[in-house]
Length: 212
Length: 212
DNA sequence: GGTTGTATCAACAGTGCGTTGATTAAATCG
DNA sequence: CGATTTAATCAACGCACTGTTGATACAACC
Image (tube, each protein chain N blue to C red):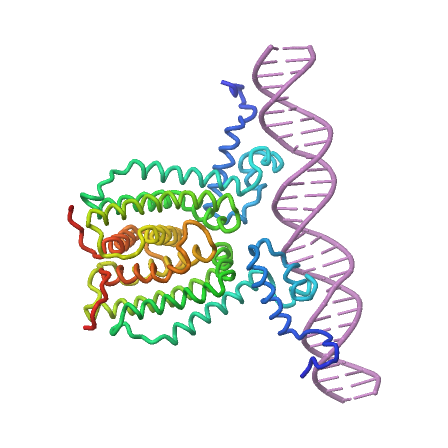
């Protein structure tokens, strides 16, 4: 082991990187990204400001790394979901939406900061866009399949347009719920409200569609 | 008239204020608010940077004034709408949503900047929140009335929660459509897609509900 | 025990912000 | 019409944060 010395002389590079990320997520829980200086991040990680630049070139790059983790976690959990849309569509949609609710709730500070930085920073925008496109593609495929089997008949809206609108709704509604703005939906009801709108928008009615 | 002189010596205070606002909206069409310095605004209005502070105390206050105008325009147009939800609900909802589409399209730069500044600036946040609450309240009242007359029966979601989610969806979907991000809904289809989701979410089906 | 690459920071330079205090010019009044 | 007030302007200053440079320390490897 490299850092064995009796008074742990200097942290390794990876540990420093990690310390910077941890500091950033901790501070983001208290204040906005632009109220956090690079010096804050450096001191929190136990280094001086210039040393920060050895690991990251900007605050936004730190945010990008944090956002990347959050997105990966969503992807992993979505991939692990059972796909039972043809047997129990209501529950299947609800489970999928639940993943977003849970992960964004667990990392609300990072999510909020990323959404705020998206307009300003092209990299954050690109990362978020790519993830959204994946999720929209996933939802589109399911909607198309549900229409093909005759379960979802109520809507004439283009499947992809519908998927885009619903995903953007989720993003905004969750962001509002977790950052405590008003108007916003109470956190305990968010999953029910969103699921209900998805179901009615896709199937055209509130009643659970029967297996074909 | 005060400024009659043959070579229009100095603009009046109101004209300067107006010039600053016009400069801000013009520059916002090209770049983000944080890429616009106070000096840019001052020079654009024909004054020096310190003189800017005579009229506004910050960039954000300029944005606040611009946003206030946009919101007022929406309010005025919404107030002027015919309220025919009981006779032709589909068309009535569509007209209401159309107001937002039109006004936000006309002032997309200001809207985008305001949405970006909302997280960071409490005044922008408060102004936007208040407006959203008004619109949510309006939609909630109509949903409650439609349920009372038996037209909207498909949903068990709390009327206000439903109104909040749908309004937040509109905000996000319009923002995405007009700022050219991806995924986004093509501008020419946005009104149709949003109206469709509102109708199906509120009435539980895609078919036009008949007058009671 | 010298060489190499990693990690660190003091000090500098640049940019934009917000303020102060003096100055000019128009409006008002005696 | 000269004196006085009020509106408007800006040069100059101090501050906070950003990003860079060049010198330095330290671990590891041969």
